[in-house]
Image (cartoon, rainbow, N blue to C red; front, side, top):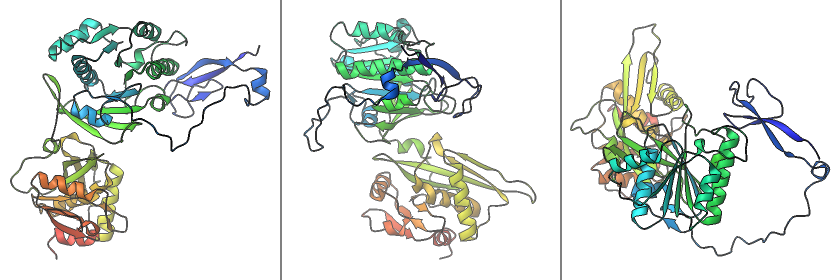
Length: 457
């Protein structure tokens, strides 16, 4: 019998090496390679391919009829929006976020609502005792919900217990990094243990039709801890974002095999737990009656939901010889450098002797390229100390040539802006054909936009 081959797996990124090294060649972390024994290689596998000897698969065509998957709506509209309508039976969902952000609170609220609606729900905690979970439920006013609680870290014990009778409709595992499989050597939280435990839980979900939710820890850079393959194994990946100093929380869908991605749900942390925010735009806009230089409103788009946010800019002139700073919060610093370069090269504005600070109000993070024009408007306003009109919004993508390019879903952005009382929109000239109650001002180039902002034409 052939000897098992040794391999070394990085506990940070999951890469595999056939020899030990002090530093991982992929992620450059030190002392993260741990030895694992792979399965034995038979002489047949070594000398031949695997063609033949397997069972025959049934192949189906793309035009075959398929039924839509059954869903479990939680009754929490913002969570159901991010999921695409609720948990799918037999699916695996991974939710990650910083410690204390509210992952366990949100899932406990969802589990309690489903249990009160008559569904069987199991909540297994590997980090807290059952009494601690019960005390949190009482603080949230959910102490009478018939949720089945357990404190365990053995994957075998969990699946044996749940497989004895009728499986639950929803199973919450908090968290996957604390689970341990006795089929694999290693401590809980290692790459091999996380992968093996997740694989067993996902197999249980597919075979028994239970919707499984896995809570995942995150690293210091915000990515989900453990092997990257974990995100490929599950059906849905949700990211719970927010700052502890701010009241709001954002649940963002990064991957969803049963719905759209980039959908968000917005929550506010209150004494009773997480409450839904029906109008997120009101959370990120500053209430003011008169214009302030350096601020503009941008209608961002998260999935199918427009969210209006305020972009704030501050330009501080320095004495000659001083090195100016560029500070950005909530936006890409490289994108800011590009907008500043276009404003200087194509529009004749000078920021080289000034410090530039850019902030997205409320701690919101913007990744939409349509924010280019709104950022440019805030920078021009801060430099010239001429405020953008209070009732105006701005959106559009800025090219390196200085062209203002159209963006997707301009109609949705204008419709949401009109709902919140805005009267005017600064946008690409190609988008002025959109039907809207707002007064539309279109611009083909950033130079013409600068002239408009400075009152030159």
